[in-house]
Image (tube, rainbow, N blue to C red; front, side, top):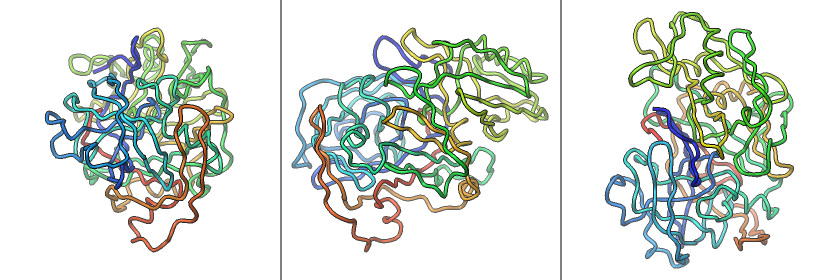
Length: 410
């Protein structure tokens, strides 16, 4: 089940059975699509109307229905741990959270591997930097951040937990993505910002400390410590030599075999206290997130797995197992990632019976022109507040409601 995160081609890995997605709109007139929100890649793509295999039952994009679509004339291909997507590049107006980017380059994919998409998800929105974009295009978020369209050049995530909820449905309320501001009601105390380990590519931080049941695992500085902070990956992956040391501190833990090779099992009645630090404070991971699944009455599967990446890819991938335990902020300038404790308001949303929104189209308050260089910014005025309540949540400037899906493997 463990696969490569990066190869010679721009590629990304996301493994597991849960994903977080939100809504955006493309074209004129605009059509809404649900897309995976992924800080571990940089391309926007949606399924083409010509995609027949592995695209059944999902909303697809037909370039002929948009008066503002323009073909770019280049092919597109991107690889993920669970397959590939390929097609062609085009440009059009893309709207999300009250912001609009015209001439945004994106891919329309007519070839999608089995398991990449499942209703209602139609594609993926990459939220990392242009330098790792398979298309070479400036990402949607980066155009907005660089243009001054946002009050602050950052994005912030709050992700909810359902792993320990036996009543959870296939789709649940997954949290929120704030573009251009932080939601102070969702975190407590200060946000600890940490400079990126390298120039902008992935959102890379050095993993400085990893502990299991109070015992610290020695991780050297340099590339062995580089960790991609990735909302599009379910679990936490790292080199086997460090994970062997980590699991050795958990009584009864053993390497998995068969279908679970690359993972580790441990007795379900064993307490696991895990923490991670990236040069600042240590952040604990809830046992509910560390326990990926219960294989038998006595045996459980851990959420840290072996990861063997290529030379150009980060050694560690830190996904939602960790991110559900913090309020996370991805800052464009200065380039950094911030973490803060979740507030009581945020924690109360774990397992909450909150309605799941459908893909909707809100009003646009700010428009940016994507030019491949420094974008320009125009203000279209305030958003009218006469929308139905369920749409208003999605249309407020910079606020995107996230949906949690337990039925996808991406």
